[in-house]
Image (cartoon, rainbow, N blue to C red; front, side, top):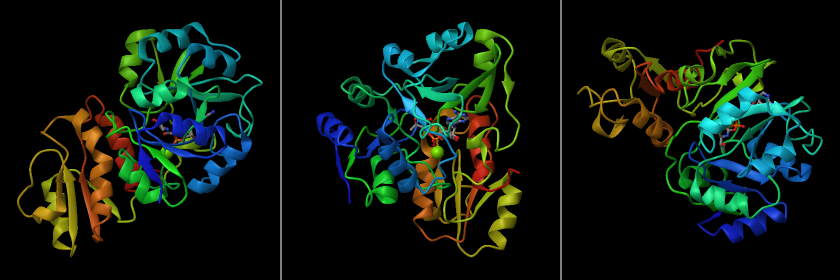
Length: 320
Ligand code: TXA
Ligand code: MG
């Protein structure tokens, strides 16, 4: 299994030698390697069993590093950077010649993120290369939000997990690309389309297919246990009646008819931000219990709720 610790010098030494590590960020844990080294990058794809046609995000901790990786930053992109970096937001920008095709599937754009996590940023600052880091889960499985999630899923395949505690945001970054000057939201996250719209004017939410946005494939965030997204207590009752061993995740308290050990609360009713922080941990916990079905109550659509429901739809394989 991997060693778990807080030693950024050790992490840096491993990364410089071409190894992969588990990397904490404020969104989810990443599986990180040297983002300019195609050997490390192919190890990331192999470790995750992810197709190499699905590009990776490069993580930076300075504007200098950003400028080495992109050929242009538009005025609109600068505004978004000013407002949200460091933070849970990834930008798709035209790549520079330094970015190898192996990291972004040969596309003209590269995904860049400047995380807001102390240990992660301290590590990035002592490296002279960006870190390529997809979420540290096997392809299509639930993302990790704690070191033990990474250990459980990939610990046998990597030497070290940098332990940055439980991720504060809890779901993956908002991904923003551009069509001319119009921001396009490719993946919803803690920073909502409305917030970006308030900052720079009209935005569009991408609703195209997987070929154009590789990350938007329908099977995603899936535990081994089948997930059912329920709208209300009646639907949950119906499901309970035909399921031997049912798990249930929701905001608020146990409706009463679910076994105490099978119920996980995401926080107080209406607290979508707290729900985001807790959702993947709840799914990891229930998935370790060999249940027949994991039911999850759809969340209110306000704040980060829409981004959460989007992920739950994919976990329940309801997106086509
Ligand atoms: O919060 C996050 O973004 C986390 C942490 C570790 O930073 N990372 C993450 O990476 O979620 P990943 O690989 O699991 O998801 C990145 C998504 C993928 O769906 C990928 O297809 C999409 O971003 N993506 C990356 N580069 C792209 C590009 N050039 N064009 C379109 N989509 C891209
Ligand atoms: Mg992922």
